Image 1 (spheres, rainbow, N blue to C red):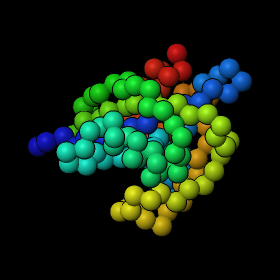
Image 2: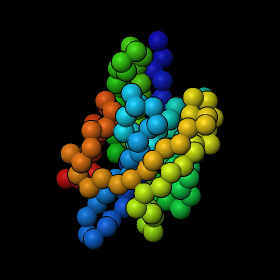
Image 3: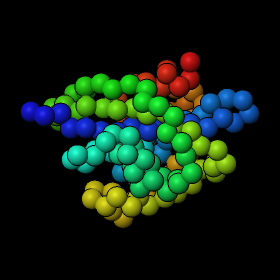
Image 4: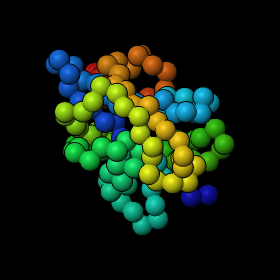
Length: 139
């Protein structure tokens, strides 16, 4: 079975000298608190996929993809293998929190995400797998 490629964005900003990471509360309780991320389309480069996903899920347009932090293989709860690509993304002049209806369609159609910032890896409990590399941002 070919792994499913997923692009994750650790969207970061500096506030009062401290790094913060953007997360969102999914409106479906079981989906919990997440990072912006999504499936890489066939023949799409993961760099461009993370840009598309950040734009579709957050509504942000003025950000900079700083670097690929890590690539791994990860087993999802349903047994599928994900080839995950975690990128560090930087922004400035962004609201403290906001609501946004993702534009990517599919399962997210009609949903509204609530975005906010965390200042440590322990501020919230992210769904499984999303916080795996926060230590690369906060340390």
